[in-house]
Amino acid sequence: MLTIIFVIVAYLLGSVSFAVLMSKAFRLPDPRTYGSHNPGATNVLRSGKKLAAVLTLLGDAAKGWLAVSLAQNYAPHDGNALLLVAAVALAVFLGHLFPVFLRFKGGKGVATALGVLLALNVWLGVAALATWIVVALIFRLSSLAALLAALAAPVYAVLLSLPLEYVLVSALISLLLIWRHKSNIQNLLAGKESKIGNKAGVRGGPKSSP
Image (tube, rainbow, N blue to C red; front, top):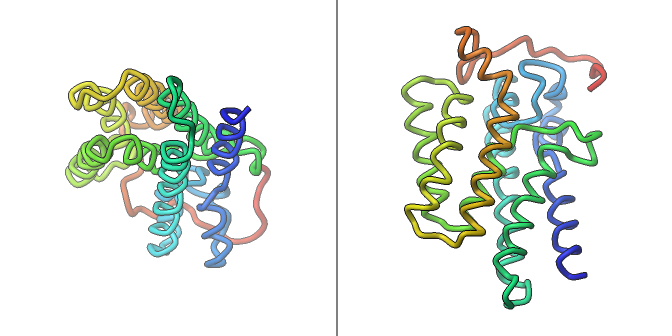
C-alpha cells in the first residue's frame, strides 16, 4: 500500500508543469501555442524571457529530485527499497511526460530526468549534465544534447557500479526520452532543428487546443 502511495504522489508531482506555471506568472503565452509546442524550458526560452526559462528548468528538475529523494529517505528500508525508488523515479518522469493536469500531453522530460539522475546518484547526474552542456555548447542544439546525454546515462550508471534497479530505470527513462524526441530526430536529420535561443513564432492571444 505504501509503495502505491509513493508512486501516485510521484506521478502527481511530475504532472506539475513549471513551463505553464512560469508562463502564467510572467504573463507569457502558453508554451503549448508556439515553437515546438512543448511545455518545457527550451521552448519557454523562445519567448525571450530567460528568467522564466531558468525557473522552468529548475522547477522541473527539482520535482524529479524531490520525488526520488523522498522515496530514498522515507520508504521502508527493506529488500524492496531499491525497487521502490526505481518505481518512483519512473513515475515522476511519466508524470512529466503524461501529466494528468494537462490532459496527458506534457513535456519531453529532459530537466525532470536530470533531477531524477541527480537523486539516484549525484555523479550520474553530473556526468549526464556535463554531456548535455558540452554538446549544447558545440552544436547549440538542445535536442541533440538531450539525446546524447540520454544515450550516455545508462552507460554512466554501469561505469559507476550502481544497483541494477538504478541502471534499468535510467535506461528506461533514456529510452522514453529518446522516443519523446522522435520529431526532433527527424528535424535533425533534415537539418531543420531550431537552435538554442532562437525565437520561433511566439505569439499572444488565446491558446489553441492542445
